[in-house]
Amino acid sequence: MSRGNDWAQPSSSALGIRFGGIHLERAYLGGLTRIITPPLSESFFHGLSTCFRLGATDYDNAIISDQAALHFTIGHDAKQPETPTITSQINLLQQLLTTRKSLHSIYSLTASGALPVIVHTDNRDTIGSLIHLKRTTLNVTNLMIMGGSEAHLVAHGLASANIPIILGSWSCVPLFWESRQCLPGPPLTDQLGAQILMDAGVKVALSNWDDTNEQSRANLFLGGCMDCRARKRKPGARSRECESGGMLGLPKMPDMVLYEGTPFEFSASVALVFESGSVRRCWPGPDE
Figure 1 (tube, rainbow, N blue to C red):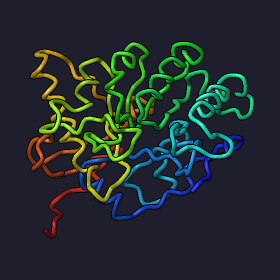
Figure 2 (cartoon, helix red, strand yellow):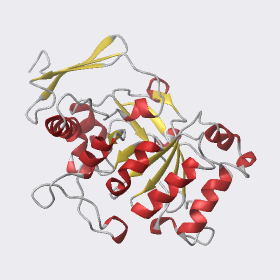
Figure 3 (cartoon, rainbow, N blue to C red):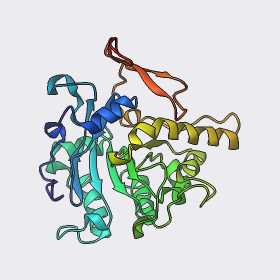
Figure 4 (cartoon, one colour):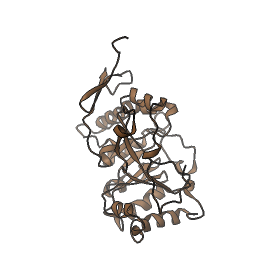
């Protein structure tokens, strides 16, 4: 795990990918065919995320992009001697994409909008500062927020600045001070944060950091639930929910997943996975 202070030499998560684990198998059984994962970090700087195929068994056939996005964390978790405050973290992010972008070619690429920059943060005020940054000095940059527990509080600002949100979870529990104003959803609150974001016109995607709760298998169902609720509140409205790969500008893949049942229902199960012109998985198998 990176200490989060090696921004002079950005690393990619590509060389750390491991295949055949139970976490990848669970996601594959749930209908996912590719995953985007950044390097783990203890602080401010993560590095470059990698997009790879879940169904692959070796490195050469797995990697779709080893430069999917550039990742940073802003918040209390990102405090270290070089970035001891939220202000210093935001200032350093701004400098790396403006006055110090010559430090590494990846920053020039990111500053031009050719490579997305994803900031991991939950706090409303931090997100508000990033909105201001996008409107002023980083107006060309393809900026996104990941986590976003309190993003619903600045939903209209995100929509006007065209900043997508990759939610860390479809629902949340306010366990930490920086995400204390998140919306757990019914019956505790009338709405989910994702619903407010979608109503405001923000592009929303769902992510999953912890596979132990098997949320990766449920994201399609949960996304469908949010879309249905949005359409009930605004008949005829089009969903702004997006697949994260599309947000990042990754190439569309000729993948198809067939479900037994309606994909947006919780009881649906994957019957067939079609990738790169061939059937990769079929359930049940010929001997089952």
